[in-house]
Image 1 (cartoon, rainbow over the protein chains, first blue to last red):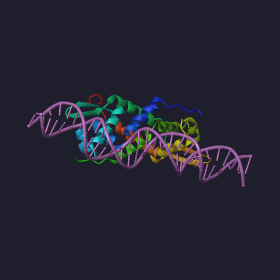
Image 2: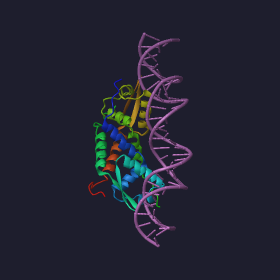
Image 3: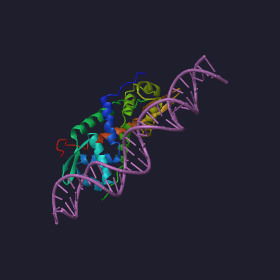
Image 4: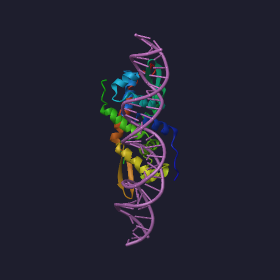
Length: 106
Length: 106
DNA sequence: ATAAATATTCGTATATTTGCGAACAATAAA
DNA sequence: TTTATTGTTCGCAAATATACGAATATTTAT
């Protein structure tokens, strides 16, 4: 029973993945990444959820570091947090390229 | 209020992400991808969780389609489900490359 | 000063996740 | 047949996540 500790990268990757683990949040990030939409109100009109629920999802994405919001009254403008986005991109990329010889598994 | 439907790809990506959204499951997949370990028992000795909890995590990864298990009594051998793994790899890859001009955001 | 527009927070309810140990199979060995 | 090995399932508890509408700020317009 050596009970290996988990690495910081593993924790961070799981944290990002968890934030991506809801279709609404995938859709939000998709809109932001495409620049097609940056305002709470616009997203609220498109996504099939209540405004308060949208705020919660935005908050989780913000807590995970994937987005950032700036108040531009009377609206709030949300954007991708590019630094962390790139970090996530790297972590996922590295994770999925671990597996090399995809045919010789088991 | 046009209330856009979510696409199947978005749902699938979120499903995969959710399965990746726990550090233990990241560690499990890491071990399987590296071939360093394929048996429940071996993983159980390394990971800092109870065997029953490990079974649950393995089951969630299996439900998400990312791994598959074969009984080789008295042990159980787990492996990456390469087809779905590649599907996940594509979905995440496509998702993260949506964002192009990473400097001109907001 | 009121009212309108926008988004967050609060309160609440329900469902899911995470975790453990005990109990349970299923097979192999004594 | 009993015992040992291995892994899953069960039963339970605690924590998180999801969702909604109502209430609350905050600023702009009337």
